[in-house]
Length: 234
Image 1 (cartoon, one colour):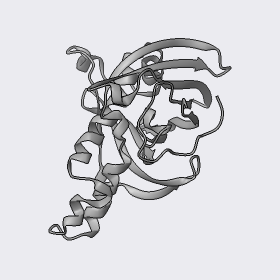
Image 2 (cartoon, rainbow, N blue to C red):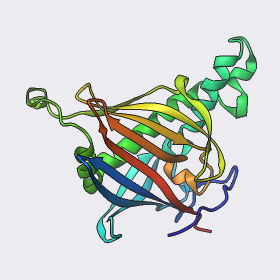
Image 3 (cartoon, rainbow, N blue to C red):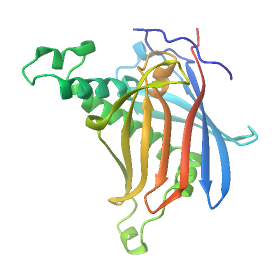
Image 4 (cartoon, rainbow, N blue to C red):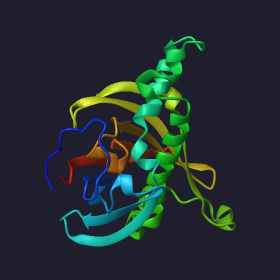
């Protein structure tokens, strides 16, 4: 899979839209790599709620490791960049300015939907065994005593601290925002996420093009997720 199709503005996700990512884990001077391909299994217009995706994981030599089907909410395809745009506009506009709630056709609820979109990405990782294993290689495990009640992985994000930027991978405007991955309420990874407008083909991944993370107690322990290719099915 090669190349990134031009965005299809205002188009819907279609069965077969796909995005390919490279994953790199840097730890103790060692670098491990994987590839992940996400493919839509149905048309957006045909799904009232959940969305089925095929997740394929390959090792650093592109040898297949796992293939699984997962279901996420349709919040994922709404992406996070729009919530960043709302927050960016609110920071410079008067609270009474009606444009605060209409910039780019957005509303305050876009922040809520974007939060669920990011959580959907985390659910994809948790529900794909191969990705969950990579996550636990990246995240420092919590103390044994905190595991007595089980393991809960959550994410906290701040769209209010987003900044506008340019995404060199897609050649389009983007936003970057901070994200924290929590394990049993302790910070496991500090991340910076780059997201563009989620037009197809990037609708299948919510417009996320890059994630750079590091262990808060060991900055040399890093994890990088980078978009490599994205294609529309037709």
